[in-house]
Image (cartoon, rainbow, N blue to C red):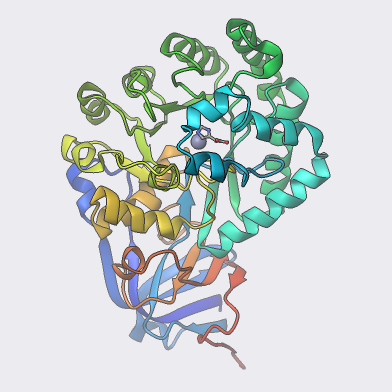
Length: 423
Ligand code: IZC
Ligand code: ZN
């Protein structure tokens, strides 16, 4: 007796194990007329719809020939923060660049102020509502960064919230310490001292198991390549895996550094050099692209996903959800931008939000694939086929989302029905 059978699946998306690099990203296994059985939070059986009919289950879901995929993985978010930055819209419209707003003490620094002043409970409640929205858009595993504290107490406050949210089990969170996200006003002109303070925090974060990854914003006016190298090295010596905000606005060489240091991911890469793109094919570093940010900042130049894939890189996609440069809950929207602005194919896009995204956050063994024996993180989409989601942009196509076999979100008025089975 299974707990749940999802039957009559029109298309079942079954990404291969990864990371998928270059050519391998072009393949996506899609099976028609399928069914899935879940038991004790685990995928217990996958097979043809016809064969599901004689299997017993406490609950049967008729997928009405729609599409089912693994739960999406969002490998780059700034989930926990205070306040909001709608006032910056007018500045953006007036043409003030993102880094200029930051330089004037706005941008990230205005969020830092708000995050410092809000209580842990306030921030927790807000992040939980965000997380529920993300889950409602089909995400079952998500990375979450700190970086709006820029002091010990507030950074730890953010990381504790990520831990508590993960414990709630709505979706799996992977925690990243992004202490070097900006230079706080009290350290203006003393960047080195600030970086040193963030490095000094690493042992405590490690002892308290508050983060698995570290990250640094390597950008003009923020942290240099040399500072990034030092921070990554200090992180790795304590057992952290590393990430880097690299080559988003200026081509500083963060992509090359990430590969050289064996970082799990290099993120943004809009301005990555030819050499940087080449290096991705040789290493284990996943290129996490964030086209929603390019869109939201009103720029014309997107990361060159085509060249990266052609060069043999493993590419993943993320929302970059944050209050300043990409304010969206919807990874499906990012899938559309990847198609329209970066010319990625539907197959590459699905691999980018599942298997490769999982590898970017160290969850390649548990998330991003549908396989018997894995956790039942599953989404039923109200779409006729897998190509439809990038095509129909900015909507939420999720109909039912299961996390560990548990229904964590269901669209109101969903046309699917579940029938309790009588023995
Ligand atoms: O709050 O603006 N790029 N960090 C680096 C961000 C964007 C988040 C923000
Ligand atoms: Zn970011």
